[in-house]
Length: 214
Image 1 (cartoon, rainbow, N blue to C red):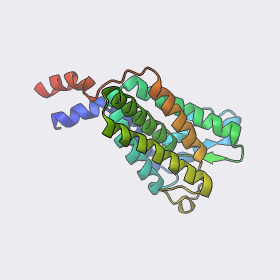
Image 2: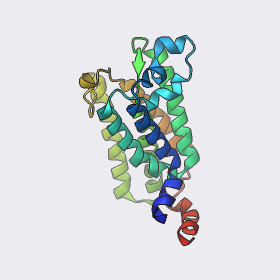
Image 3: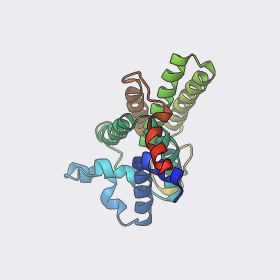
């Protein structure tokens, strides 16, 4: 295997582990009902569903969008700061089902990485926003701000229309849960502004350099 690719995979192993797990579950549709968020099953003691539901999806179209987003955004966030990335993922993974259980009792089933994707997107956008503000890089500051505003507009669209922007929820036979994206936005923002010091992208490069030189 190419050394640079091996280096990248090692430094982003959490991200690609999650993506591969989601793909594997989509290949085993019979397993998803045992792992999805099912409100009645959670209430009956199926607590594991709080974490595993994010890896389940309703169809391949649903999975592809979620996996692409996590693969692209998660890899960058993991290299910037793994502890912050893990904190964001765990925060979203736990809080999203908890909020659904409390605030949306009519939502009986939930699947997908989209809530985690939202948290990771917000984590990256906030990190860039703070970093570029510190560096007085106004162009990238404006880009990060526009991305945050645009994403907030996407969530507003979902709340207003009751439809998902990228996935055909009717074809996949599921009800969109924009509140999950709101939670992701909040959790990602909180983790992003917690400790303003942002690890640069080259944080892990010394380890990679040793690997490439081997």
